[in-house]
Length: 118
Image 1: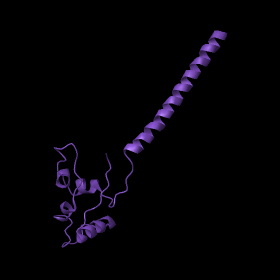
Image 2: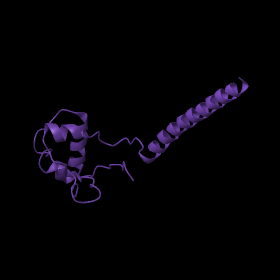
Image 3: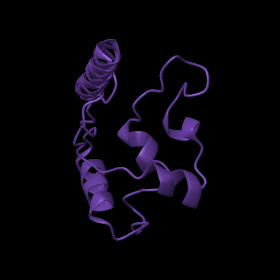
Image 4: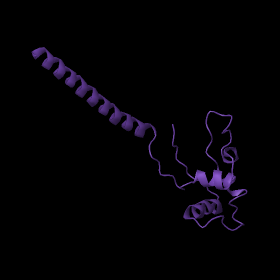
């Protein structure tokens, strides 16, 4: 009987320790993920889904080398203003984000995009 109690308590200790280690690993994983992939507040909240799905724009139209290079480049302002968001044409939408883009275009300034991945 005593042996059974020792085996049972030992098993429970091992399970508790394993559960604690798993919980600790999950917390550590989340912290490391946030460090490697921080949430970045960009100057313009760009909607990839609208551009790709709604307007059928291919990645390579904005990101040169997206299909051939190890990394896609950050688009320059000229790629936005040459066709779709020309300042001599009416805005495509009435969103405040497009207004920010058009302001950058009118001033001839590049958008100060922040790196998301290192």
